[in-house]
Length: 116
Image (tube, rainbow, N blue to C red; front, side, top):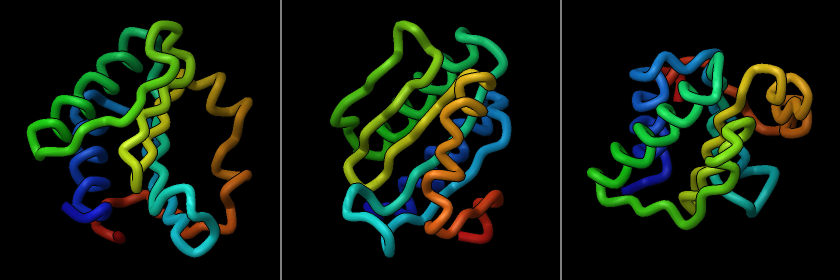
């Protein structure tokens, strides 16, 4: 499965759980870390965990295993590592504080999955 296909599945999984302000950042040209970051936020820790659970379930069904999940218990910032795709799910305040979009502004940002 390509990283672009993984991004589309993760995007839909986040959207299904009412993820807010979902952004995709193509970092292939600026980093060897991954091909894409997906960043989204939820309004509370229960929603953030539900979004992470749905991403994991949908990508697992598609045959993609998560290499590592960080931050699930606190649910302020959950990081899900799928090798070429890194999913970041935040509580709103933490997203504003860490501002990954600013840090990775050299990447190409998409707000609509159809732009990808």
